[in-house]
Image (cartoon, rainbow, N blue to C red):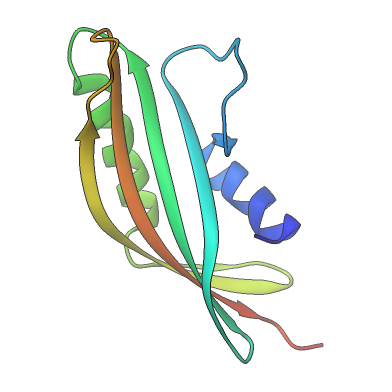
Length: 117
């Protein structure tokens, strides 16, 4: 993932890249992206977003993910050096050994077109 794409996603998702710090307050979001294909000036990324919460139910984490889906489903983002198209995919609740922790995971496809200079 390029630095520009990482910064863009940090701002858009308002979360941490790859892992949260030990002192992160619940609920929080963590994302990671890996390039899966490059075709000329179009790069395809698999983005995984996780919402982590310490709550009795999944409701708060689900609500946060609902808001992220609204931002990301079939959206086009125009930046100075690239534009990106996003498509939401599979969404699941992920069980944690610690029953107090709730995790909701969403997969998103991102197509990034680099702007030619």
